[in-house]
Amino acid sequence: MGNILIGGAWPYANGSIHIGHIAALLPGDVLARYYRLKGDEVFYVSGSDCHGTPITIRAKQEGKTPQEISDYYHKEFVEVFEGLGFSYDLYGKTSDASHISFVTGFHKRLYESEYIYEKSAPEAYCKHCCKVLTDRLVTGICPNCGSRAKGDQCDDCQAVLEPSALIEPVCSECKSPVTFIETKQLYIALSGLEPLLSDYLLSKSKWRRNAVSFSKRYIDEGLRDRAITRNLDWGINVPREGYEDKRIYIWAENVLGYLSASKTVAESRGIDFKELWGSNSRHYYVHGKDNIPFHTIILPALLLAHGEGLRLPDDIISSEYLTLDGRKISTSQNHAIWAKDIVHKYNPDSLRYFFIANGPEKRDTDFTWREFIERNNGELLGAYGNLVNRTLAFIAKYNDRIIPSGILNNNISEIIRGIYPRVGLKIEEGHFKEALDEIFNFVRFGNKYYDEARPWITRTGDPDKCADTLYNCVQIIANLAILLEPFLPFSSEKVIGWLNLNKEWKPQYVNDGIRLPAISILFERLESQRA
Picture 1 (cartoon, rainbow, N blue to C red):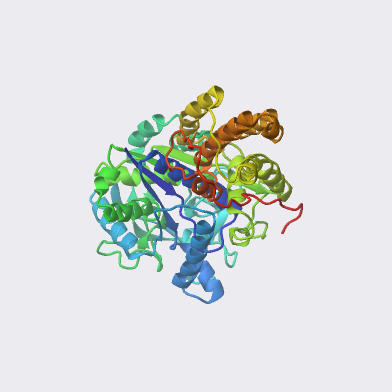
Picture 2 (picture 1 turned 90 degrees about the horizontal axis):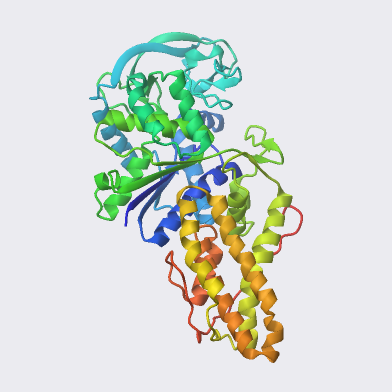
């Protein structure tokens, strides 16, 4: 048994999350559920990112405090994730005392590193607004791709930026040109860490293509040193004398949430934090492609500079974008489907299935209501739900709910023995769509077996053959319930209960003579319109 850390990206608590966020984060829950079934010690953590400029902007717009805004959306996020079955071991927030305490201690040690230094650097100032501007309050033209960008990152090319690097920088609030004044900050020497980061990234050739290509580009272009402190009034205090008016820059503290949250979970289980962040572990990070550099460059740089040998990321599960009706999701234009609006309206397994089966795993994919409904009705209801319902309903009606005796078909037995390692390896390597396809090939096999055996006919003409067919179908269903548990936990939980299965990632065999309880329909047909 090993330690498995799974870190889901921390969404900004400045507004509702949309289906694009769900599609990017859901693979983390699949991983967590799978590894728990295998018997590993799982630490599945995430939380709400409660600091930073976007939250202060929202607070100002609504006449509230940043704390009130972040707490409101944190509560909404929790309800969404719980409704969709995300099985976090801890979903916290960066404003929690435990996170603040951990980050403060981490930074105190970090500042002793040879890779941290102090220098004066330009800070954006708007003469019209008479105030210092945080990075995201500065907009301009990206020097790399020519697109409009904010002062911290270009959304189009994912370049990590400084406001002073923008062409024609202006204040995002009043659109006036900004000036730059010198101010003292702490910096991390990414340039000095570049050889270590380059060697590390070269060892990760099996990451998803976008993570490899984006990270390689940053290295090839040459890493620039980055400020880890900023002149802000909302965030974590800088634990250094002379920096009382500054805060830790958000990107230098939010990624440390993986450490602070997992430490809390480890301590609650009596497990040494250093063991979790040591050699007998595997660490996954799950997020969208816009977060790649923060997980492949920034987080490793902080861990290396810290100097205690903390484990660097093993696996980067970085999704492409989910579009909506052929267009990029835009929160500013309200072209989005908000998670809070659908989480209680639809079967959560229907949503989970679509976001994996049609997820942006290797390329951008599109969400349309038509395809969502077709996949629910044709695949979940028409294939999997149909196999389960007609088998168990037949047993309930014609065999007094008693599972009949039979002999396990050799072909079925072989499929059951072989499918667990094949699907498991696909999940471990981040190939979730392929894993789901493999399981649904087994679903289709089960329906074909049922159709060709025709138990509705053999029930009277050859009762022994009918019993044998139903017995084998029950074995198929039992194993499908376990194989699908990481993907479809709500429906699997029902079937696991009906058949009294062990929740373990291994072949399942149901004894004859067991009486089924009352069963229910797993999936309902959706009408061809938005409900």
